[in-house]
Length: 107
Image 1 (cartoon, one colour):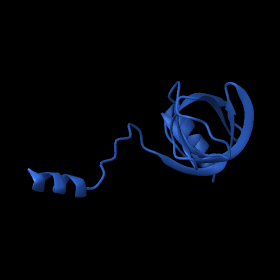
Image 2 (cartoon, helix red, strand yellow):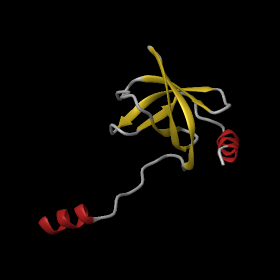
Image 3 (cartoon, rainbow, N blue to C red):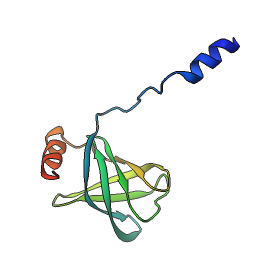
């Protein structure tokens, strides 16, 4: 039994994301539902959400609006925050064509 536990602990981490990510690296504006606005960098984007680095701290569960460059705002919820970056799950998944368009426009 102990050997199995040691083997599982050394196993590579299994990716559990529902959607593939596209690396972006462009400017993003983050606005909390309660007010305030900050500029950060969107690191990656998918149909279901994104990862953002921004100067402020948004706790898990915070409702925010993400505005990527020239595009509309996308509403979502912070699902993780490690102090330097946060993961946002969009309320309404983006159409794959929108993700592609944003990725191409960010180059």
